Structures are given as C-alpha cells and as structure tokens.
Amino acid sequence: MSYGQGGQGEPPWDPWKPGSQQPDWGSGNRTPDWAALAEASETRNRRRRLLVIGGSAIATLAVGAAVAVAVVSANGDNSASNQSGKLPGTTAVPSDTTAPAPSFAPTSAPPPLDPMDFISSAKKDTAPLSPDILFPGSQLTMVDRVYRKGPTASTTKCATGVQRTLPKVLTDNGCTRLIRVTYSKGGVAVTVGVAVFDTKAQADKAKAQADSKSIITSLPGQGVATFCRTSVCRSTTNSYGRYAYFTLAGFTNGKDVTTKSAEVFTTGDDLAEFTFRQIRRRGEAQASSAANR
Image (cartoon, rainbow, N blue to C red; front, side):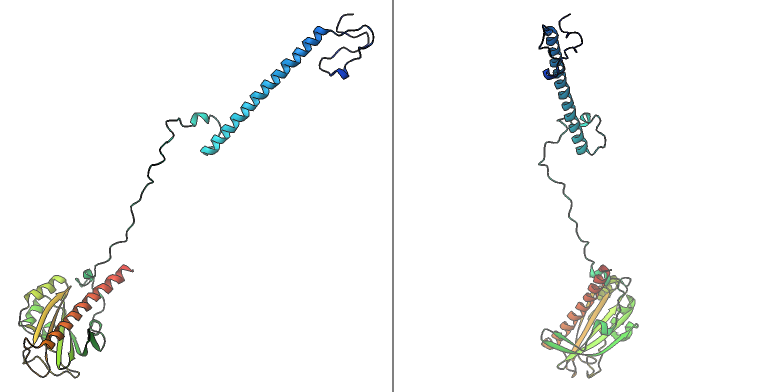
C-alpha cells in the first residue's frame, strides 16, 4: 500500500472536498499523504490568485467600456470604437472662455418718405384736387382771427383768372390748372390763387419770373363785394413743390391799401400761410399713405 491511498475498497482523498466529505481515515494505521496534500493546497492558492487577477481584468474592461460610452454620448456618435483616438489633445481644447459674444448690427427702420417728393411732380402727386379739398370748410381760424370763406373757382385755362403780366408767366411755364378762393373779415377781402404745374422746376421758374404787376384777378361773390379792381391792393407771390400761389388783398369799400393798412397785410399773410400749410399737408398725406401700403 502506498501513502496517499486509502485501504482496499475505500475512495481516495479528494483535495477539492471539505474535510467532512473525505473518507474516514480515523481507524487503522492509515495516514494521509502530506506531500499530496501540500501540492493540492498550492494548486488551490494558484487558482484563487488566477481568479482574482482575472476578476481585476474584467473590472478594468468594464471601466474602459464605461469611458467609451461616455465619450460616445458626449460626441453624439453611435459607434464606440477607437473613441480615444478622436479626443482632442490638450492644445486643441479652448482655454479662453472670456472672449466677447458675437455682436450683430442693430436693425433700423427705413427712412420716412419725403412729402416734398409727392408734391414736386404730377406723376406722384395723384391725390384728388379741388378748391374744396385744398380749402375745406366754410371758414378759417388763424389764432384768434376768423375768416369767412366766400366763392371758389377752378379752371384749366390759367390765363383767364389772372391779369397784367401773370397770364404770360403761367402760360409760358405750362400751368395746367388755376384754383381761386376768397376769404373776408371786417371789410377786408383776399383772393388766393394756386397755379398748378407738372413739375417743381416749372413752379419755381414761374415764381422767379413774376413781378410786381403779376397779380391774380379778385373773386367776389357770396356776400363779398367787388374789390381790388380799380383800387390799390397788396399782392404776394410764392411757390412750394409744383404749386405757385398768389394773394391779392384789399378793402371791399374800394379804399386804397397803404403801408399803414395792418389789417390787410395780416389777412394776406394769414391766407398765404394757410395755403402753404395745405399744400404741405397734401404731400404729408400722400407720403404716409404710400408708406403704409
């Protein structure tokens, strides 16, 4: 009988089983094979170390997989292969986070349309025009002065409503229409005449060519007596856009106007100012309408 083996008919010693499951060697003169037991113990230790090392390797692989997944998630890529090679180096990572944010030029609204453009040419000045449109209502109030509106007239034959040197001035410069209206207050009357041209240049030229004898014909009626036909009266000439406008003011009783006739000068100036405002408002209304289209 050799050491390390049980008696005849008994199972051998199994180094992988706990002692409670080993064969009963407590009887007889049988003794264990100590060399075999030592070798089995060393075998178990080596196997345990291999298991520990193998487990560490598996854990390392798990950590590597987690890093790869994190990189994929950050980069928005669906593939986790070779992600470490795609990470930027330290020199490629931006370090300055204080750079100013991009700026954008402020938007601005387009410039408003110029009212003068609309009253400087017949091609753009297309709004309706009549004596009652240009001079609306039945009276006019300037500050504390109230003027009653009298008769109105409109003609395409401009020379028929003016006198002396003005018919030639209007005709030579292509006047297309002449509008007249009369206002009165306290024995003083004034007739305003508005000559219409196709262009601003024509109106400006008519104004420049008019002289002290270039006057319109007064327009009496509707309670206003004939005035400024044989008496001395005060006249003015001006232009704005494609319109040249004139005033003729005097006394309705036929008295001559002198430098001391303040009421006549005030009446003429008020109506000249109102005419200018009405022409300007015409341009503003058309410019506003065009901007809103």
